Amino acid sequence: MSFVACRPRNAAATREAILDAATRRFSAESYDQVGIRDVAGEVGVDPALISRYFGSKEELFRAVMDGCGTGADLTEGDRATFGERMAHDIVYGARKEGKLAWLLLMLRSIASPKAAEVIQRASRETFYEPFIAWVGGEDAEIRVRIAAGMMMGLTVSRDLSGGLNMTPDQCERLKTRVAKILQDLVDG
Image (cartoon, rainbow, N blue to C red; front, side, top):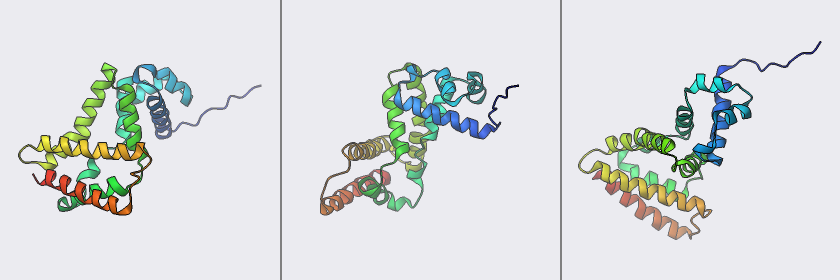
């Protein structure tokens, strides 16, 4: 008589395992290279289970992107200190794996029309639209695009080069300048 070890049923843990596997796959390969069967095989589940939890590959990809975080933390805290908080994070903040995963997902998959649509919709819904609404006023969208480009560019530059590689005095001067620019953009 032989016994087969069964995986205990735990929907939340299985869903999380699927998301973890999908995040690894989409971060390492392009959207078009990753299949539902690949993700299911990595987790040891039937591909139909992924469809049951997520509906489609596009929805799984969106769930992975949503798991990388949103821009909600930008608008938490006192509006009057926005520039200072963001500049401090840019200059002295730790490397954030979630943000890097989001960047890898985008870079590897933006060439796919299906993935591009998901990426664009997710960035609009979870980042740009809430940030624009929070900033408000005349030219809010323009000001947000400038602020976002500056924050992303400086953060990616810092992380790709392994740090800013500046003296403490230069770091403080950079922080002061970035804080002023960002605060001016938010204040309108």
